[in-house]
Image (cartoon, rainbow, N blue to C red; front, side, top):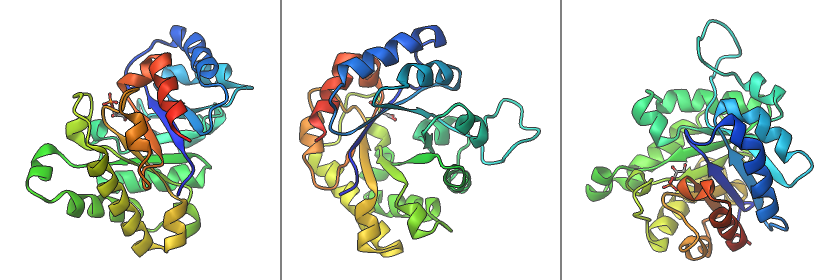
Length: 250
Ligand code: 13P
């Protein structure tokens, strides 16, 4: 299906002073990777991360951006700033940002459009809460998130977007979705994209699973036809674990 991408989401971990050596460690540990390898780091680590990744196969991503070009938005970071740093990817709409920082489907859509307009690759996160899963509304909820995220985006641009299915109840909890549960939703996401665009466009989109993916369960999850990679939190902070996940993606 889509290109295989394993991306680490460091979240609010690692110091700028630790970043250069850690990205070098990741690059060495994942040498010969048969998938795209991405480290998404805090804003303040990006410049060191890009320096360390230069000349290696590792790509660097941010964890957020603002949807305006510039101006009076104290504390925010624009797409141009990320491009200027030579960042390639940006995570958009992570559930932690939706939950704690008032991210909405509307701001997610604006951010995706801005990222695409500036040549950044958006990694767009969708996922249901435990209550929503138990209420049986998972696919309905995710269909809505995908439709709103891709609103006004052309097929050519949509094919560049990476979608990460991250069930909120599986994030940082050690409770992974089973491979079948993850595949069901990832296939559902591809079906929504096929309806919005076409089968051929939907097949080009990389759909990742995220949520307690680790060295032990990555292989089974990644063997599913509609799971084209992973968005890794905790296990991306240990190079050996991250490298095992990368090795499982081929
Ligand atoms: P964990 O891998 O720590 O569960 O985090 C997943 C995640 O939120 C990645 O964006």
